[in-house]
Length: 278
Length: 310
Image (cartoon, rainbow over all chains, first blue to last red; front, side, top):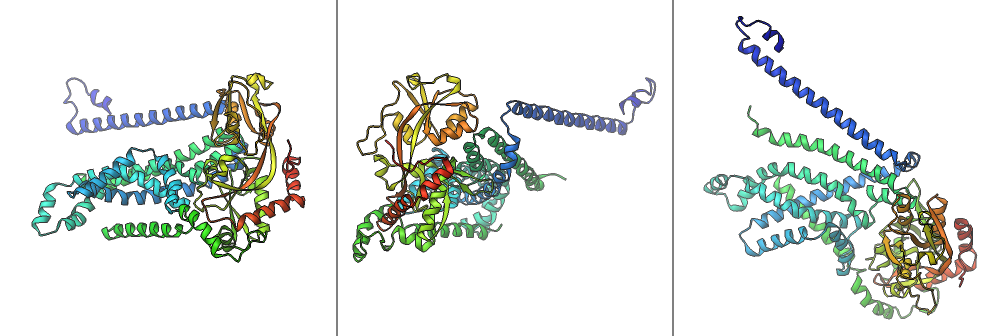
């Protein structure tokens, strides 16, 4: 596109403004296309290299994986179920936690702060142990699935408390004042004005946490839940094929996170729609 | 989602938690221990000596019969005692024994797969009824678990990686030896294994260091991955043979180091088991005398491990 414009010669009138715009747009499009091509090529080279590297160990037994694949894949629904239930419960914990962290009531603020501090200050695996093994000492015997989800959501809820707090604080103060001048109570304002907007702000962040949750759900394998990681680990250990089964599990987790990341991206765009200038 | 919708989720969660805590309160840890003598006392008509013990209210036997199923913990990382089939069912010697016990109780069997360390530690919270997991009876475990008579006896076998070049017990002196977490093998290597019978179990090689991995088979699997952080491995002879058969770089070192009485375990902090233990004992003894255990042992191992040796 540039060439014909330049070929008009030094004494010509030169390209018009429209031609310049078109030329620039074309150049940009080409650059973008080149970037994409190189991106894809690099991925192919790197992933191919990784596959060759893992294959070169000779430890990935495809025949074995063919036999056990269906059983290991059978753990995927439980992995997703644990992640979905946990993230839903975590949102509840996070909203309560965030409201507590923003409260002007000292005991409520103290309790919320303690929750965040305690949970963020102890390892997730210890919390799972606690819910599964220590709670029965107090007469609370939760089924494995609920114990696992409760521990995961309790943990994630603490981290997400800060996300929700930021989301709530991002709502301009003027809106709260406007609501107050209309005679709305503080609670009403929170429910009708602040929270609905805050949710919109934090939804992409929740999506992110969900993707992290898919991976951390492997930790509930300890509490007798036969999810993806438990199956890969047990089958691998019993048959001295841990390398094969763990590579397979890693691939599945990766695939799952890529799959849910696509949703996450669309969600992010959808949520940002009202901020885009037309 | 509306605000009301979110609040209803919170309410639902609260209901779930409340329901679970009230449901779990009956077979709870501390209250069950306290109520055990009381429950036995109130059912004074039930003879404690007769093997045909009647179920006591709130007892383990009543719980099992009422549920119509026996929930058994198993660790399917431990072939040939317990392992998975590709269709998700279980097989192995422990699985066969558990299935037979349930059959003789007249109930169905159900397996659950908690971590081995959670089984040996007691405090099961009533999540499963018994462990049929080749568990050695030791003084420490007796503090938290009740045991049936042994249903078989396996030799503990020392092994080494072929990479180490070690072929004798003395060759392991000063080396690092691997075993599974919370196993009697780890206890023996650290000189802490005690059956409470005064039996001399021998001594590990001099100056050894020990390391544990989540389960026994992880030790030779590390050698297969060309990690040689340790040279020795102590486990059941059945597991060592399994590893050698699977083509792992393992050699047996010397004769079996000691023999283990392996039994069915019941949680002491669970529902009172005074009604259940006599029946369990009778079933295990019957399975010995009518040749069932011998047949199962020969089927899995090719030899009879059900007779006490040494």
